[in-house]
Amino acid sequence: MPIKTRYAEYHILSIALEIIALALTKRDTKVGSIAWKYIDYIKEHYTESELNMDKIAAVLKIHRTTLSRIFQAEMDVSPGFYLHQYRVKKALSLLLESDLMIKEIAENCGFAHVNHFCKVIHDTTGMTPKRYRKKYLLSDEAEGLLSE
Image 1 (cartoon, rainbow, N blue to C red):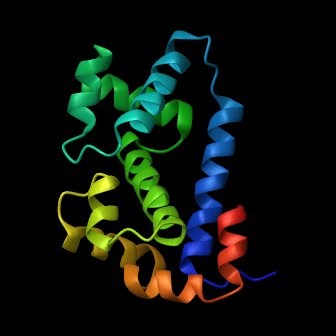
Image 2 (image 1 turned 30 degrees about the vertical axis):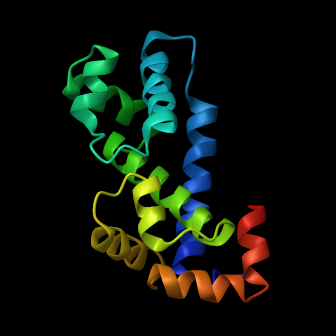
């Protein structure tokens, strides 16, 4: 079945990365533990717009470069990309699952500026957040996106 939208491609890649990360990472090793601590921290703090690699590295008491190298080796993506992808995934879910205003979704997903948020969503889906919401809330495709 052909992939119909850029978001569908992005969503499939996102799920694949998460499955690979779960399969390959060993939580009980020191290296795997660092990667998982990073992921756990993101899941708890992704809403903070000032969240970045330096802040997380300081919290984990590890040098930024070491964290980046370990995370990249364990997860096969950069820590910055993972944070970005996580925020976008949450934002796209909120666009379909809530009636929050676009600005509120941006703030709730850690985007400091709504204009930047709109550009990121457009780059990911090929649509503005408003158009994305309207298209998928009025179509049968939305049900498929939400159930994935």
